[in-house]
Length: 383
Image 1 (cartoon, helix red, strand yellow):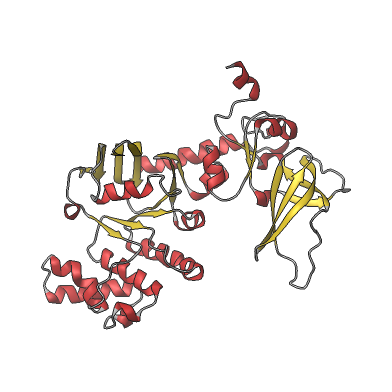
Image 2: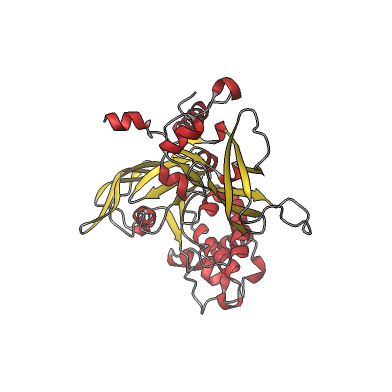
């Protein structure tokens, strides 16, 4: 059995090796790519409250980097320090190798898009987009040309003469983006810019935002508390908790191979199996994360499958969520499992399972991923 609770001799797949290989690939890319933003020993204190703790992080030029975490985790404070709106209590901020820790916001080649967009209601869209250029005293002919290009980038050339009140929320968000991009920042900071949009428009804007980022090639640093948004948009994600980073990696890496219990439970939904349950089901007394979509329902009388882990249980609750149905199962192992089943049946097909049914849960052993550092129970007791 491997350190991740898998049986390599049966499956031929070592999760620990896979996680290490993915980490090495990302580290290699980071070494060879230009670093846009480097945070070195960054800290921020508000009186007795420590908002950010000794943060070290490098963000590559041209990548879409998301800082994800719950309210109060420190992600927005880090963004404000990069922008120059907050002064670090300790550490350095480097922008393409230049120390900008003490530089004023207007002396940094960064720009920020906020959730409220902050468009001037008395100005036309073209005038809003051109505002930063006018402040910098760029001549009118050049301003007109650059505004046209910026509006074309966000596919809103046809609204140049309108006022912000005449646009939809999604259109205003794109105008705020155009106004920020027109100044050609080396880094664009986005502080939950999609937070005020409804779900359908938000999902549409996520795709458009990613496409725009690829077209302009500018480093985007995106703050969000929405896990799905971070996974959809990002090249890499930093998961924040209590003023520090729990894990940094590609979306697939942090979702499939969480390095802490917090990352496993915050990024999506998971079944966290404690050491005792893991010992009972997997033969290894370490904490494991098992995603609900990897667990399947079977009839309680169905025979066990070779190589699979089977657990008997009873359906406690069923939650219909459109694309999938979520089942809460109380098992004989003494733990409640979450199971998600894709609704791939025809719309008129009645659900086969109901509350109170006895069922059997099945999952492959190598789908349960061990949390690094969760030592066997024996080692903890000995300590």
